[in-house]
Image (cartoon, rainbow, N blue to C red; front, side, top):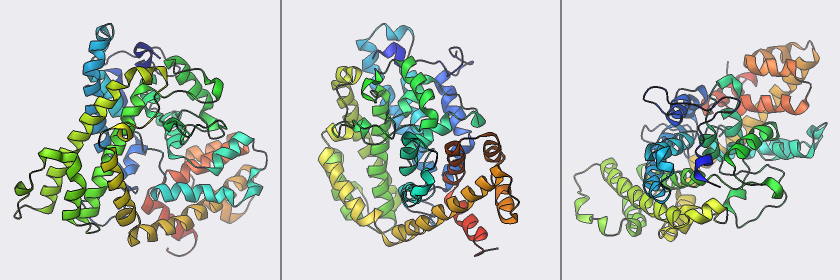
Length: 436
């Protein structure tokens, strides 16, 4: 792989983009995402704590904005050295281009997440696992997609749907795709982080192949591609934010004490931790904010160092691990993760609402899939006619126009997975007659 191809400002099906006034093509990507309907929906989607009543608890929206901020810093820090190592790049690109690409891809990284977080992914997958009869007329590749709903693949689908008009640059789409392989890929290598999950559904295979080909990622002879180098920075930004900020949320909610939080962050902060300055008269939010800023700064520096040390292997495709896992703080982050799983992610209010998600999402799928199939066949059932009217116009159009069972199912999944937590819960109650 070479940086010149990897930083392509071309958009799929269009001629190469040019700067628009003072905005580069990559900055246009960022703006298109932040003003999009799928991005706005993140304000009421679960990060860790579903349906939060406290205003300081993070949602997917605030998490995405923070990841984007960290991603921009990582991109610019890395670019300072990369541009020195490759002086020919400096004639075309600046450190702001690197930062803008990573910021845009980071901003979009959770667009495909369904209601109720990772529990929602499991619930959508379980629906099809429990209904083998739904495999009728589907290929092996399509069935593999349905058996494992993947937020990253759904995100790539959203970014490439004409109805949203995003048309992002190839560089941003490449940086977004942390898992450049399909769901049915059989040759997974457990040592390669890029093959832990999958990054596109069968409906978007051609789009991804076009992106990968233009960016010259690598030959798909093995069934998978190499990651775009900047995808490592997007992943690192996400890892940094959820490790530190989920811990902060847990402390704010009283799930883990402030003293324990300080001790977990101490190995990362090192000499920058001045316990005496964490005054008793300061608010908890202010003290946590100070610790958070210092910890994120240290982690950005560490991950930048790993990326630059491994740049050659990253470009050759021989390096394939998380930057945080290779940093000097990996053990500290693992300890934070251990406490977060035990004390925060498994808190009673979290698992209660996640359990509800396993009823709500399959219930919505059951009703709307039945309505979509009835609508396609022209059946006159009043129940299904009413339910079909609740589908968005673009879904009803897809149902009418397609003869593909898979495309119909995919369109209904788009509708259900795109809902906010509260919308999904309220709609489920209404169509089940629990709330009118």
